[in-house]
Every structure is written in C-alpha cells, then in structure tokens.
Image (cartoon, rainbow, N blue to C red; front, side, top):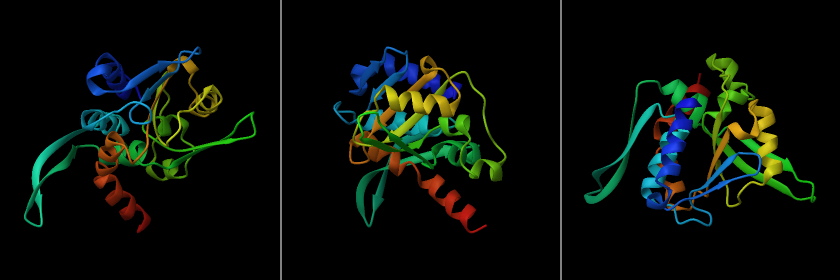
Length: 196
C-alpha cells in the first residue's frame, strides 16, 4: 500500500498530463477519476495497472502483431507474482454498499487495499495480509464513490479516511481497458490457483 501510495502521489502531480481529475474529500480521502468524467488515457491506464499491482511490476506498451497485423501490446514484467497479482491486482473484493438514500453502490475492488482488508479466503491460502497506515484501491465502476462508500472501505481496510486513495475507472474507458489487459499474469495465476 505504501509503495502504491507513492505512485498515487506521482499521478496527482502529473494529473493534467494524464488527463485525470483529482478530488480530495473533506475527510482527506483522495479520489482519482481516471475515466468517468475525466478523459484519462493510455498513460493513465499504465499507471492504474501499476497501482493495481502494488507497484511490484513494470507495465509498458510494446510493439507487436496479431495475425500479421501490427498493433501495440501491453507487457507486464514482475518478480513477485503472488503478492502483485493475487494479493493486489485480482478484483476479488465486491464493494457493495447500501446507501442512506436507499440506493446501492457497487464496484469491483482491486489493488493493495485488498491486502489491508484481508477479507477474502484467498488471503488465508496465500498467507499474506498487510497492516498499513494508508490504503490504495482501484474501483471498476461507472460511478464515483461518495463519502459513505469511502468510510465503508476505510473501516474494512483499517485506515483513517485521510489515508485512503481510490482510483476509479470503468473498464470501457481507455485507462480501464489498459489495466484490464494488464491482468494477463493475474488471470493465469488465478486459474492455476482454482485448479489447485
């Protein structure tokens, strides 16, 4: 979480270049819109993917070809695949919050905040959880979270609201699409885990 938190600081410092929108809530939580109202883009998607991986991997665009046609490819290189993918990148946390207005907020949560919360059975199997003064999460959704959702996440991740950073992007956005494609190693590891 602390490694990803430093990367969030870098994203905020270059927010205009990355075409993201940053909002600091009254509680001190930081929301980074990477593709809902903000345009986002490929570079924002590369940073989003690195944050999903707890900054334990390099993510880049490389030239390639598919069936003879030239196209860009997303390359992911890492030395700690279980920590990066299973404890962080895997979108295994369903953020489902009943709001005071009677509506429901839903998003798929990934990123190192999952290891701080340690709510999934998967963490017992991989033997990893994390205590951190900060938590960083990525939400796959089309709607920005409100303070109710932020407080719900903080309670479960065991961090004060001022220690939470959430990056939000729908999978259909450019940034969201890049971070989804960067899940190739995670998808393979998850399948291997399911197969025993």
